[in-house]
Length: 600
Image (cartoon, rainbow, N blue to C red; front, side, top):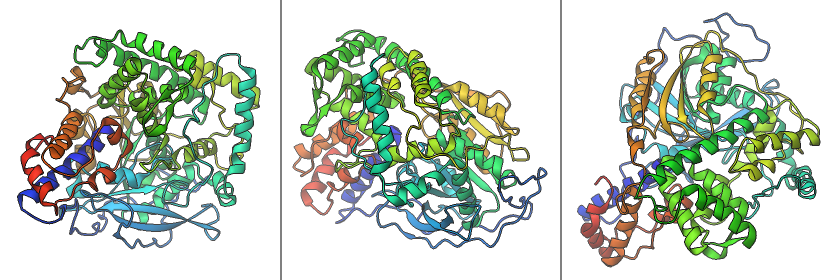
C-alpha cells in the first residue's frame, strides 16, 4: 500500500520536525501503543472455541475447548518496526502437522502494537495477503494509518505465516533480477525451457524447505491462527484480511465457526481451490484496471503522458521497442527486461496512488529509454530489499498456492490453462502464457477446505469494483458462499479498500468495535478517485521529495530522494537513517523546511 509508505515517512518527518523544534538531540518517536495493558479477559457471553479438526461436525454455537493455551512472551523487536512504530515481537511454536501435535514443531514470528486505550476489546489480527507477504512488515507500516479508535480498543497483532519471513521459512534460490519471462504464442522451445526450470526449482531449496513445503497450505495457516488467538488470550478472533488474507479468514471461519468474533475480508478471493480459475479472473482484472488508468490519464492534463500520446499507444510502443532492444538501462547498472516492464505496469495498477508514478515511469521510458522507475515498480511485487536481496515472498507464494490446489495436471494441460488465461488479456498475454502452475511442486497433503462456515458470527466482505488482483465478482462470490457474510461494495479503483479509501473506514470501525454490520446492499464511492493526477508538486510524494531538496538546500547532509527511492524502501528505514536531529545543520534545515512536510 503506497499510502502506508507515504504515511510512515510523513509521520517520521513530523517527529523529526517536532524534535528540531524542541531542540532535542535525537528522534524520540512517541511510539504507537506505548505503555498499554494486556488484552482483557474474555466476556462471559462469548462462545467457547472450536477445534477446527478435519471431519469434526459441530452444531452452530457449539464447540470443543482445546488444551491449555501457549503463552506469549512479548519483548521489543530487534529487527522490526521503524522510527514511528515500536513493535513488540514474540515467537509461538506450532505443530508442523496439526494432526500430530506431539510431532515436529515450527516457529511463528508475531508482532504487536499494544492498544493505546484502557478499554481493550482484545487483539485485532491482520494478514496483508500474498500468499507470502510478511504480516510483521505490514504492521510496522500500517499501524500509522489504522484508525485511532481501533488502535485504542485493540492490540494490533500480525504474524508471518508458516514458511514466510521471520517464521520457519521456505528457503530456495531467489535472485529474481531479470528473471521475469515472457512467452510468445507457439514458442514450444521456450515453453520446454520453462518446464525444465520449474521441475528443477526444488533442487535449489534446502532439505528443511522440502520437508516444510507440503504443510504450508491455508488450512494449516488457519489452524495456526487459532493457536495465536488462544495464545493472546482471546475467546474469539477479531481479524482483518486483505486479498489472500480473505481466503485465510474464510478458511478459519469454516474450520472454527464458533471462534469467530468479527472478520473483515477485504478484496475477496474467489472461493475455489483451482489456481487456473484465479488466473482467468486476474487476466481480465488487470486489463480492466489498465483501461481505467489510461482513461483517467488521457482525460487529465496533469498526467505525465498528456504531451506524449494516448496512454495505450505509449504502452504498446514501449512493449514493441523493448522487444527489439532487449533491455532498457536502469539505475545502479541494472537493466529493465521486457518481462519486468510488464510486471512494473501490473504493480502500479494495484493502487490509484501509484498511477501518477506509472505515468511518470512510462513517460521516462518513452522519452529517454530509461527503465529505472518501471524497474522500481516491478521490484515492489518481487520483494526486492534496499540492499538488492529479495525476501522469500515469491517462493512462499508458489508453495502455498500449490499446497492448496489438489490437482497436478499433466504438462500439456498446464500449458493449455496458461494459454487460456493469456487469451483473456490483450495487454499482458505473454506474461500470463509463461505461467507453469504447480509443475515441480510437491503433491498436496491437505488441499484447501472451502465451506459456508455455518454457525459463524456475521462476516464483513468488502469488494472494490475496479480491483485488478481480486476482481469485484470474486468478493460477490465469497460473500454468497459464506452463510453469515454481507458484502459492502466500494465504487473505486485499486486493490482492496480499507486503509486506502476513506469512506470504508467508519464501516469497518463500527463493525470491529461494536459488531454493527452495514445494511444489506450498502456501499460507498471513492471520493478521491476523481483526480488521481495532481498537478506537479502537489502530491504527497512530490512534497516529500521537495522537503528533502529543501533540507539539502539549507545545509543538511541528506540524500537526494526520488519516487524510486520510496518504492525501494517500504519501511522508510534507509531514508529515516539519514535524518539526524543531533546535527545542528539538520535542525536548522528542518525549521526552514517544515512547512513542506505533507499534512504538517
